[in-house]
Image (cartoon, rainbow, N blue to C red; front, side, top):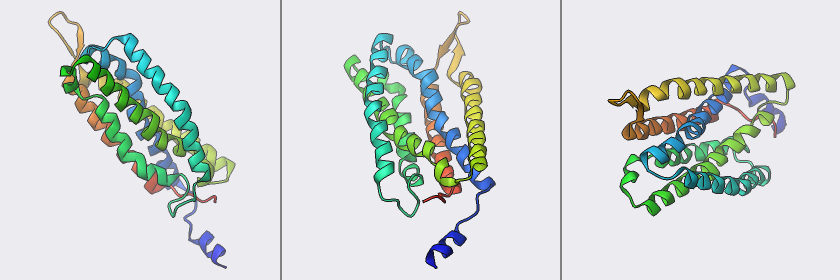
Length: 224
């Protein structure tokens, strides 16, 4: 009897879930695409770290990812579901830490630190963001469609909305960001503005957290 009541109390799948799932990838890419497009530029042009060293940092992060991705997937599969579900709860918990850790990578005042400290700063903040908090949001988010609905057509619609979110974020990062973080010098060359990179990183970190929390708020896990 109680099982029937629970089923009746769950909101039917609809547009709210689709928009919520779209917001997940929309927020996700505000930090992910920003890192892909501007991390190397920020480290080399603002912090003065050699490209080879940055490459080593990125490689180290990928090695850590191999363990944290697997661990997060295992946690999602084995942890006892909370009242917020098995996957949504992690988005709720990690959205703000993910946004804040992304911001920390791009603090322009780090350029005045000694080189070893600058390298350590980027290494720690990048791994903290990408290998831990981003993973703790993205792995559950990618698995959510399987528990939002068990209908194949409805899952396909979630995939479409997710793609829309990614495209929208990509357009903003690709078209708006260059207008904000670059300026022309006296020779007509485009140079990066350190303070603007930090400001944009803060804005994108806030938006990423807000949209991820929107994903949490609007979606419902129905498949137990």
